[in-house]
Length: 473
Image 1: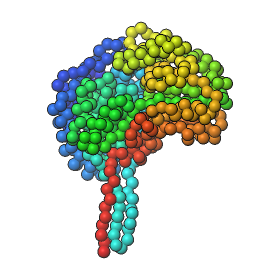
Image 2: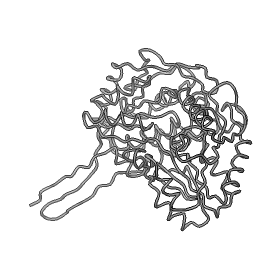
Image 3: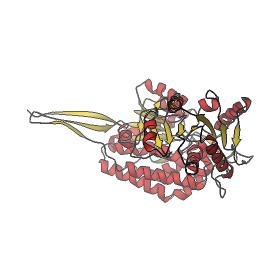
């Protein structure tokens, strides 16, 4: 279908274009200025979206899985076909440079293709003259999906793909800070999924709680902060909705003394600062052996000085702005606290005065108890900390309420693996970072999440086992 990707933003409910009861402003974070309006969904429109999804569930669950998989695969093809246009819109609302924005659209398409190849298992427990018993997996119903602003397309498709392959229907809400690409994807997908299978609505801060408390949902899939995730779980408890929560992280990386500093510095830098460090699994605490600390610090600072921070539409921009004013103020508050406590701040290249820009900042060996170490910045602030003893640094890395991801850097892979296995995180990388795959489960320990996304485990989060007993004699 032909869709204007740069104006007239509408919701998709029951396969139709629906304007909101009012509108919300969408701000370009590179300028701080409003450039578009998105629909603000009313309670009645939410009720309509849930009702149409519930009606569509009866027929969609009966569609053979091969046809559901084909539809999800076609959705991936459509994303690829519109990647260039969507990337430009993505940059205006999210801030990330256009090339990296396009990579997200393409990666989301790849996710749809990969999940479309997955089928839930059926287990035969007994097949005898007396009886036949099998366990199969069946869909849950209508899914409430709430996606964040840091990876708005990818993390939405992480939910859409398995939910729809499994036979569920969905009402998806993007962040009010980044609704536009998702709304347009809803239009693009209307020819792919039957009306009501995938509904996409948008709105302000009131819409999320309206959704999580709505009795029509069987499950909530939420990606966002731990504080909000706790409120989502509390809301879901009232009628025992199932939940998958992918929440915050304060991820530690450990650098052993045998590394080749020239080889790892660039990888460690972008593992910490890609997307202006607005990544739940970014390196947020960097523990470096004292013998190589100065060398790595100096190399990271040199990269920070060479990397252009600016409007994502500008030639050569590598890092963009903080996505929204609320998060910008949080990060600035952390910086002010560090300055007030006389911590050593090493900063990279200058940034534009207009917009929500913050220079890449390395905090040089702050105390472990300082806020920049203990709190998740979700912005371009990286504390570097010295260590001498392996057991001590593992304890320090694990001394967090979070447990999303971590990394170990060493030429001795066997030793690095031993350390990795002792880290209390759902994902651990050795000599790499930020690598996630659709066929590999992604989960958080402690307060970093509840449930699983991706892999077969992630697909089965959108299903429930059903045991079938058949008497034969």
